[in-house]
Length: 145
Image (cartoon, rainbow, N blue to C red; front, side, top):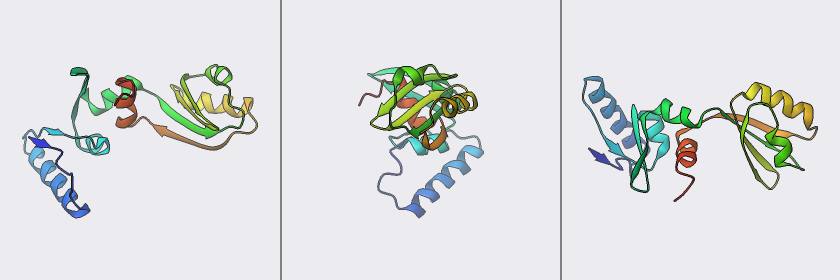
């Protein structure tokens, strides 16, 4: 049982710790760790139990937890972003707009991008990202603290 095992560790020590954990799990041992470093959980956990409000809201392999949110996030800059126009793009499940920055959660990033470029001529700085564990946790817990 490890509670926040990498807090305060330097880079070399962190790598050494995870190498040791992997060596032990490769021999059939189980390592349980609690962490707020979701990137580490994404990289090293085989199974995640997600708690929110004292209740289990998700339990399973990391990829299963991420698939509960699903899809890809498409981020870009658009001067006149309109939620209604963006929600109608193919595959779009969720729209977030913060000023000129837009994030779309989509189940079909290819169709979303084709329609985005066909509909808006001033789209720029486009990037796509697979759902990471942090995004899944925020979505599954309502983004609460």
